[in-house]
Image (cartoon, rainbow, N blue to C red; front, side, top):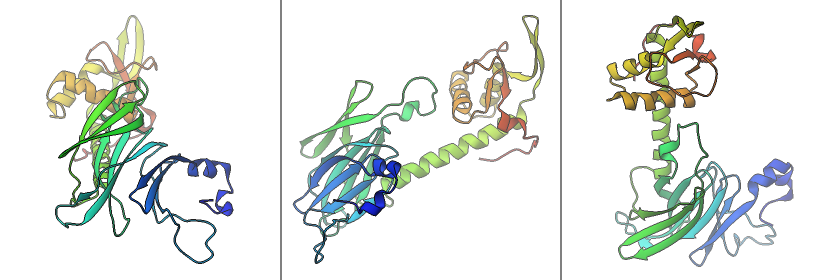
Length: 284
């Protein structure tokens, strides 16, 4: 029993606690991954407290992954360069497409992420296709290089060269999430500026009138002119990210038609952006 019965009072919470993967970490510890994305490090012999009947984790990493952890594999022990401290290592992957590498000091089991790989990073703003999940992990070690072999939901196998574990200025997972947050904020600023700059008018096509819309060519020209994209093809990709990720605009037919660089393709701003009448320019 790894959890008190009172903690499992809701079925949904019980499902989140469900352990989906396990791996030993040295001789004293093991690591568990949960359906909800949490990681926990346990002592094999419990905490050593008198009359202990239910073991509690030593360390819990809540939300290490955003969805189910599918595999955990232990890496080799290393000596960290700056602290000269012996470190145990382990790697995890999950249905969120993330592959994370952690190092844990042998004397105090407090994990620190030193490498992050997102298998779906290139497709994170696309609306078509399924998201990529990382389903299995293997490890190949040949001094001084460690490679991770990752099996994905798309049927592919990726070989990732792992950097040597080191204590950087910031936890790699926290740094990655901050980067993604800043990227999302940048997209939001661009969206606000697009809404302020692009003028909507009434247009006609094939004897049919469309009120309050703009053309795909106008948006592409704006993104290039404002240096948000170097080429028109890049501007189309950025525009599609604004369309799918922020719902900035949609095709006048209300079908799932992505942005096209065409003066005969008409689009309207989404409801949340329609209401914003301010023409004050946001800054990056």
